Length: 283
Image (tube, rainbow, N blue to C red; front, top):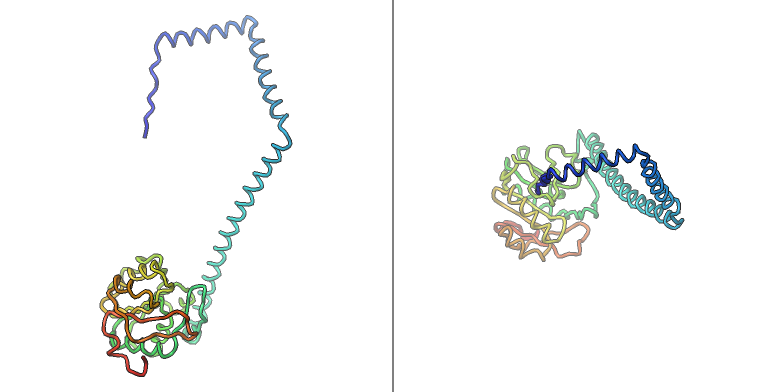
């Protein structure tokens, strides 16, 4: 920060300024003040003339600038309001679903895929294989995390032992109907998970919503935070090198599939020998 110091004023300069002010006052009292006042009035009149002689084109340009600024501001405001309304609608929808599903959420939570959120549900065979592995690794009273994998979570709710603890980390707030087992998760904020859930899961099953290095890299950060031991990752075949570098996973022979026949080549990657535990009839 620059500090501006007060300038040093010499006594001679101060005396000159005081005398000049006295001379002006005396001249005004002797009648020269009328001249000074007249000159000031002429300057003011000239200034007013300049204002009055502004061309119509200049005035129109000012009005056009105001209109353009107003249009831009209005557009930004409308976009903001639209986003707020969409968020509020999603919140109200989630609240309503939670109220309706208070007694039996599984009866209500048969949601359709939301392609805008890059959702693609597993087929039944894939759900059975992944759920079987989850039950084997976690045991009857362990913990399983489904990271962006709502299909597996719903299947596990149907087949789990009473003491098995499940947690769904998911961006789609429709799944908030499952109450405390639902944790709102956005892969773009990979560290934003409850502290009491870190390194608490016997198995983490992750299915990143997008086939991009950014998405998998950030998802991998969350996986490491949550996993106590075993990791399963379902994603595109082209992500194999990155899955190995980030999480030390290897590609399995088992091929996960989707109910609506996803066009991308999908693969399963594991931190252990998954294939030795998968029956031949499900590969």
